[in-house]
Every structure is written in C-alpha cells, then in structure tokens.
Image (cartoon, rainbow, N blue to C red):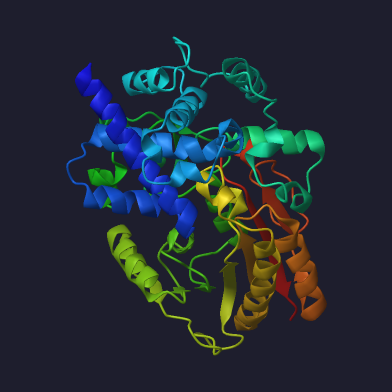
Length: 435
C-alpha cells in the first residue's frame, strides 16, 4: 500500500508540473510532456501512459474541473500537487474518461476524502456524466458549453443541437487513423499480428481506424517499411479534394512535416512532380525522412521563407494550401489548446490565411486547381476566407468534387465534423483557375 501511495504522489507531481508548464507557457501539451519524459528517464512505459492519459483527461474536462476549485491560482504554487484539491481534480478527470479505475486513482480518491466508487464514468453519456459529477461533488450544474471557451460557439456555423453533438464528440478520446500506403488487407494482417485491431471504412479506400492502440506504432516493422502513415480521417479527406493525378505537377505550399504531401505522392503513384514547402526548414527535413521511408522519389522539398514563391507563377497543375489556423478542429485530440487559444486569434489567422492563399494561388496555371484547407471549425477562417479570395481573385471559381462521405457532389466547399466519421474537424474548398 505504501508503494501505491508513493506512486500516486509521484504521478500527481508529474501531472502538476506538466499542466502548470502548459498553462504558463502556452506550449502544446504533447511537446511539454514528451520533454518531461526525456528528462525523467526512470519512468516506465506504464507510468508514462498513466501520466499522459490523466494529463489529457485533465485538459479535456478542465471546463468542469475548474468549477471544483476554491482558488485556481494557488493550485499552481509549489506544493499544490500535494493538496487535497489537486487529488480531487485528478480523481474526477480519471473517473470521467475511464470505466475501469486504476489503483492509483483510488489513492487520489482517499487523499481527496471522497466516497469510494467501484466504476468510472467512461461509458456514460455527457449528460449522465454531468449528473453523476454533480452528485459526487454536490456542485453546481456542469454545463456542456463550459467544456470549451465561451467565444467558440459564436464562430461555428452549427445550430444548438448540432453544436451539443459536436461538444459531446470533443469529450471522447479520439481513435488513431492510419493511411495505408500498400494494399490495405495485407497491412491489416500485419497489424493484427502485432496485437492491433484495425477496422475498415468504406468511405476512404486507404483509411484504417485503431481504437485504444497500446502499441508503439513507430516501432512496428510495417511502419519502418513505409507501409502506413498516421493521418487522421479528416486530413485524408483534404487530400482527396485535390484529385491529384499521376504525371501532374503539384505544389504543397504549407507542407509541414508532409502528411498530406505523402498522400498526394501516393495518389500520383510516384509519377510527376510534387514540390513541398514550409517556412520551417526542420519540418522539411522530417519530410525528407518520411519520403525516403515511403520510397517516394517525386517529392522535392523547397523552403518558402520570402515573399517570392519557391515555384514560378502559372507553372503547376495544382496548389494545396493547408493554411496555418487556430486548430479548433483538433481540440478533441489536443484538448489543452482550448485553454491556451484566444478569441482574437481567429481574426488574426483569417488575415494570414487570405494572404497565403492569394500569393500561393499565383502558382496555378490557367485551368489549374487550388485547394484551400484548414483544421479550424471557425467560419471566419473558412467560408469567409473563400468569399474574400473570390472577390479578390476573380479569375478563380469554386469547383465541386465528390464527397466520399455521401457520394454526392460538393458545392466547392466541404466541412468534415467529428460526428461524421469519428475524426477531427476540417474544411476544404476547391478552386479552378479560368483558362
């Protein structure tokens, strides 16, 4: 019992330190927690998993958990990790996301002087969790809207019922989505031999879903051999919007580490030319590694860090502008970002997005395609940017493509929501430059 109590205190301290650093620095939680694990090498894989999962549960439910605090500022002082209040938050976060309770959580329950509960709330609906939490803590009602910043609802083009459905999905742990770069059925057999349970979707031909993967995918031989990439379903939908074909010349203007670049290379069957750019050269170094692993020879990374385009005007068949954004569509996967984002970020991003789209579109040749995409749910970053671009660049028109979710033709714009396919949220628009 003493060993378990020490373990509970150790986990509580680790989670407190990382959460405090995230709130104070605004840096992404995954980056902060990975840096912590690199520094504290004595932690085993089970320790790291419990710390990371509870940390992300804390951020996921922070909108409710902070209602249990008497003094939110003193919580982050030195010694706050040993308080009864901190144990209460950790226990509640674990309860909300898990059906079966970890023994460490029972230690937190005792430290917090809370009644024993045999099972967690992981399998309950959002409304049932709200009711049970209120009963446990004798607190004020827990409103679903409190789980995200108040400014978000005004930015999102959803009616009240759809918005509540969106919030309910945000509170679920996301699955992992893979994109097969080989024949999908053969990859499934390899993944099953590693103890994974991939499921197929008929909507995207190369997509595979993994629920609760407990295996380090990057250590699998199938990953090292370039047989799959981690890429969310919604991200793969953006690649589909390009309709890139073998032999064409494309420019991925905001490639990052190249997830969609690799998807386009696969769609082009390693034929033609695919130029990938980003202002961060270290991202392009990662892309080079990924391209080598996947054995793509048609990818040409080129930095874009000046006003001048890294490609000639009117020289490519297609341009993908997967623009920087607020990332509100990934808040399910990155729940910490809900509490570090600001309302004013939306307008600032929209201005930047229009500027990038306007400049990058000049690379499309007459008759060429431009696809604009974000992982934001905010209308100001999506439809509003499209309208502003069309008013500014009248040589472009929207062009529809087949929506894999429905089989119907889009009107030139498409939104993907978590409730559509158990995935992130994204937006895409497809333009054709007049001849």
